[in-house]
Amino acid sequence: MTASHLLVPVPIPDRIAALIGACTPAHILQAEFDADCAAREVRRFRGPRLGIEDQADRELALAELARANKALAAHHPRLVVRPGSAW
Image 1 (cartoon, rainbow, N blue to C red):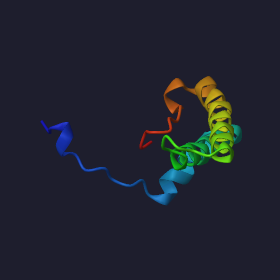
Image 2 (cartoon, helix red, strand yellow):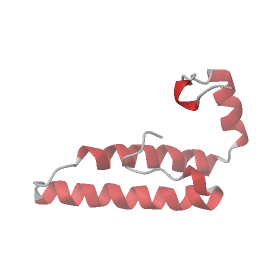
Image 3 (cartoon, one colour):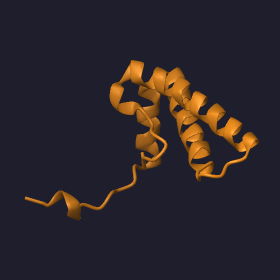
Image 4 (cartoon, rainbow, N blue to C red):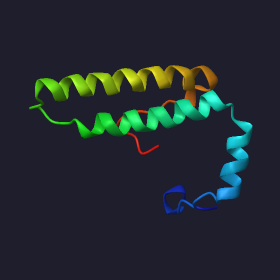
């Protein structure tokens, strides 16, 4: 039996990723891409002293993340992207 903390993540080959993508509806793939981009934007605007424009940009990114997560959660609840998560 292998300890789970000793397992090394293995990258998925491109052909396998293409097969997975071919089985997933296009609007879900787009929502996943949008959620990933929005989460990256949210992480950019961290810190207690954000200017007014930065706060507005962060709120916009949070709204885009929420919109994309709504589509992802409707397809499968575990697909939701969080700003602080590695996935």
